[in-house]
Length: 189
Image (cartoon, rainbow, N blue to C red; front, side, top):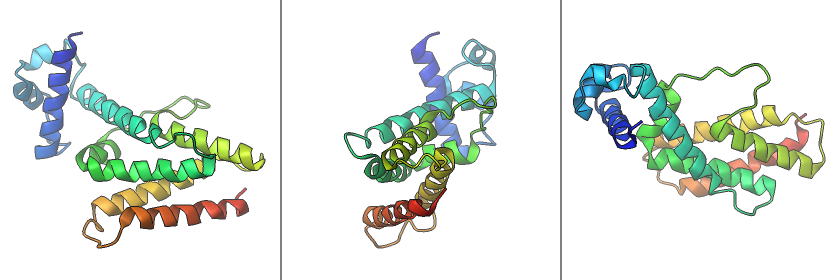
């Protein structure tokens, strides 16, 4: 597969999603924007949903890379705060990508028992490390990770939406909230 052509198609799809919205982005429009015939796009993708899924996969990978940089050499609970802050930062820096990924991209079903993938897998792994460090095997890392993810997602969504104009140091405020949230883990089972 020609990488440059594939990337051109994805960039065209991204621009159309930004300007027209996810639902109104058609395969024909993507082809026109990328300089292809609709039929020639099938050399690269199986249709509109495959193009938009690939676009979401690229964004998901970028989010995971952004979050991985936050881990460094930190104790697990501290790393969790920085992981969540990186998630919020990604949303602020790339709101269109964030919206594409979390409001429009289709969820990929996993097989029962299949471990989480992508950015959520990073959160689960760090929670598992924190639970192991606490020596608390009775705690369910997946449940704790889901709670942290939901909390960080709420903070990110509010920051790029309803609280975009809030005149506070949002990163410092979010950090304080996340630290407080994680202190409450001692009561979780």
